[in-house]
Length: 220
Image 1 (tube, rainbow, N blue to C red):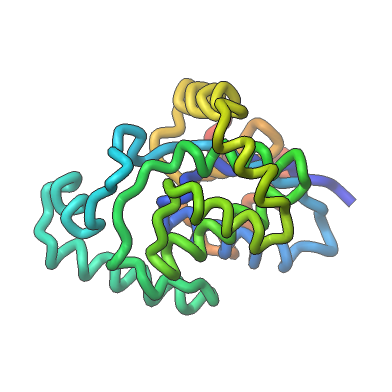
Image 2 (image 1 turned 135 degrees about the vertical axis):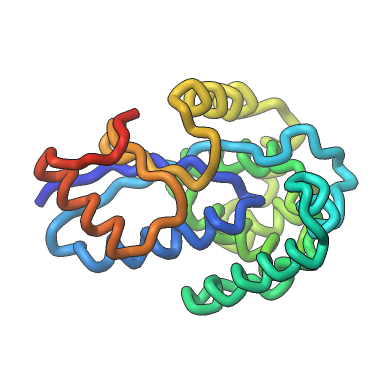
């Protein structure tokens, strides 16, 4: 059985990243008799300069994209419907604040050393999109860590230090230089870039073409 390595470039604050992973999981399950997979999450910050106080999400998106709050509310509602169909909790999508996610990314690097990176990523998605919690707040981050069975004191030690800051910055620089300007982005076998929250059937097709080295997706 062939193994496909998937490097996922994403942000905790990106709803399409949560949707993209849910679709990826469906695709992987569809071909689990053909391939095995290894996953590694990499940092991307949608709002690296966001102050700790954050900003109401509809106000933030309206200003960022130059569209009315009503337009952004409609777009977010459509996203909620998509998420619901995938079994994701996006119940507080429109009530959340835009947040700084640098510390969340540092904790994800630490969680990788505990072999729980994906579990923490999903817990952070749930906290942010499902409960509109402040994922830049140490207490919330610690709760997410403890919810997946990791040690809260160990996570707090990371948060109180500069641990993994260099690794997060290196991720961001590496993938920006590789041409990743939006997330989610999936890099398969460190060579092929699949951009966006693609449907499962599209991903399955890409996996098979990559395995046979006949993919047309852009190389990284």
